[in-house]
Length: 223
Image (cartoon, rainbow, N blue to C red; front, side, top):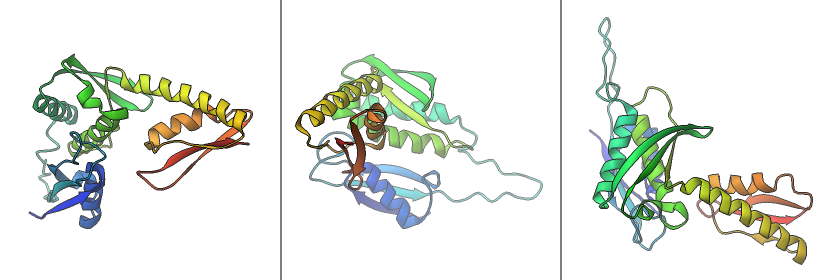
């Protein structure tokens, strides 16, 4: 069974580097986090790179007249995903409850419970985003069709959306007053989309993104 160790600035980067080296998709590997970045569980910043082990899952060849059923296909992808989240939370000393909700972005798994769920959210949701990435790998490992899962905790996604919309409006006013463009801090694609959507019909300002991931930024400037 082939396995490799890959590293990157974030866990997501490390996994992607490993997938590129193996030249396979995420559903073909089992991922084990060997070393987290130096600041925070599943943190996205830090002096120490993330390190993961990727084990290639062998393809199961169907036999004539007797179709094979893999162990992964026999398991419920959502139950396996929820089990993974629960185990991660338990290692952090958290007792959580998971609720399933359908949304326009996909299936949302909303986390609640006792203890400091802020540990699962992290600074500006960075830990939650990293955990969401891993959750989608787990879910699609056990699913025959692509699943899109959004991970939320204590309504963070909605609160963050409102914060970014309010920030967009304030910065648009600043650009109009000073007649100088504003470059925001690096954001995830989802958060950049919120900024662009909020200002897309603005009469006096426009937005665009510049830079490369994970340091891609939104720019607000006069039309």
